[in-house]
Amino acid sequence: MGRYILKRLLSMIVIMFCAAILVFTLMYFVPGDPARLQLGVDIPENILQAKRHELRIDRPYIVQLGSFLYQAFLKLDFGYSWKYGVSVMDELITRLPRTLAIGIPAMLLNVIIGTVLGIYSAIHEGKWQDSLTMVIAMVFVSAPNFWVALMFILLFALKLNWVPAFGIESWKCYILPVICSALPGIAINARQARSSMLEVVRADYISTARAKGQKDGVIVRKHMLPNAMMPIITGVAGGLCQLVAGSPVIETVFSIPGVGVYMLSGVNLRDRPVVCGCVVFFALFTSIVVLIMDLSYAFLDPRIKAQYAKGR
Image (cartoon, rainbow, N blue to C red; front, side, top):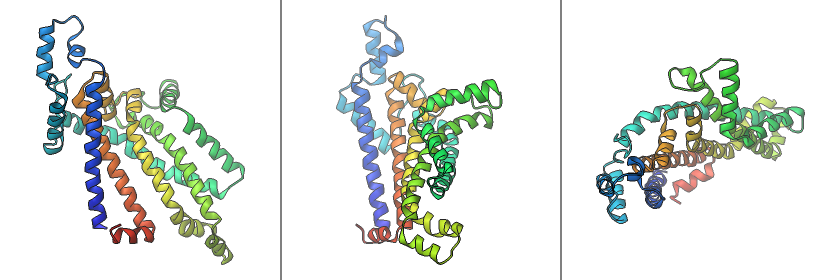
């Protein structure tokens, strides 16, 4: 197991390295002059050249790429924002808790509510409870995140005045962002849990457990759920990655100054250090989630654990 974890940690470094090269290359060749975007259109050429030299974007591509990789991976420094002159790493550390304050509660709701709804739907297969649950899940899977967020703002913030519509002044400001972030994941996990549970329901050992007279609650808890968890874990991990990837939308709608909004502003301003720093952070986060998911497989399935022990 230790050998496998070491291999995965090394692969995480490679993934982050490739992600850093890719995003730097895209930002380098994307149309638009960062110096002109900051100074304006009607600026003398000598001032533009001085600004390009200040931002160090007048050097060849290979030199800039090598300098970025050296700073990012050896010094853990993504540089300073071209627009605001603030350390990107400091901004990420400041904004990360706000993004996690939305992502972690939303993920807990995804896991708990989505799994329970999926099990409930599978137990009542073919009945109105199953149909109603799946119809609601399909609605929230299909509805765009930003549209759901805007509808929730109109209803709960403006009409009913129950919660704030934006800001981070109090914990109430995070209620709507968390719910809007969680709803698509709940729907996806509910469908995934239902599908997994239905596959297990038809297994022979479930029929044997029923023939022995075990109660439905015991069968679900001890036999069905553990064997249906692997696809559910896959869905949960994917949902967590989607939460982070979709954070720019939710944070923009609710005016939450998190990592997602920070990256989006960097893209709009062609602020390369900001975009590269955020993408590397997202790549690290996704790699950690996938690693935890793979290790969870080993604890649930002894066959996979045996393969890890052999170093395969």
